Length: 328
Image (cartoon, rainbow, N blue to C red; front, side, top):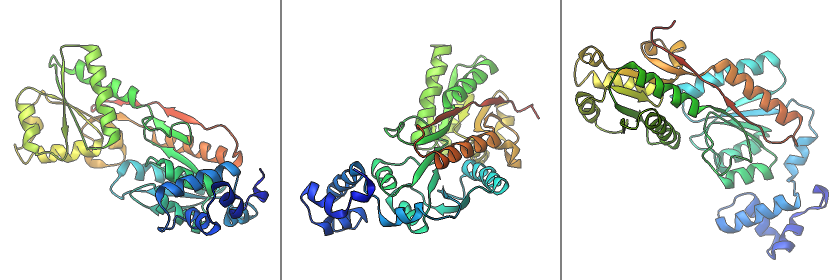
């Protein structure tokens, strides 16, 4: 069915509900149950319904508008990436862009996108199914960056992600080769991507040497617990990212002055490669992400999606490298 032929009435007749119910569901009004909203959205997508504002947007002559969803100013990884990406937007001058601040990628932030007439969003937060369907209904494209293939939305949106498996393998081999210790600690937050890296790292360590022990310390725990692990022989630490490494090492220094001097055989590696951007992080080895390449690959995916909307979904996995502390 063509989009011109689809009306609210047609959707209502298909589902045996009122036109008002359909209208409220598509605008995410609170008087409609979530179950019925999902049912109505899916039927609208199936029939090819196009809201009026989308049809009007398709006729406009302005440059497409890209919304970059920022979850937190404290997220150095995404801040560095978005800085590189905005440089490309400014240099190429093909698209307008703006920042949207939201801790979650949900229908609420997409409502802002609808009001602002955003054509495509870049996000490092996983879209849930209802958000994806709302975006699809309102013709908002999605490019997901930085995360991993761990959700059921893998095949539905463009993705530019980091090769976490490669990074965890490099970290495991680096630490295993540093000394004869077979005890390892993974340090990270309570977060799906951190859990994913912990599993990859543990699997790689055990593949290298079945006699190794790998335990997990979450950054929310009492720092004295980690100090106990280190004192007990766990001298190989793999951190979820460089920022957490820097913060946790500073916390350890409150337990014992200069933790690294006290335990000279302590081996540390982070993940991200922020040492080039933040002076305080230059004293650790890390798994390095090439941020300019990351941003360029993302820009190319954005360009392809906006210029060729029916192009198959792209899934790009970017390699990482080992950057040792002694390297400049």
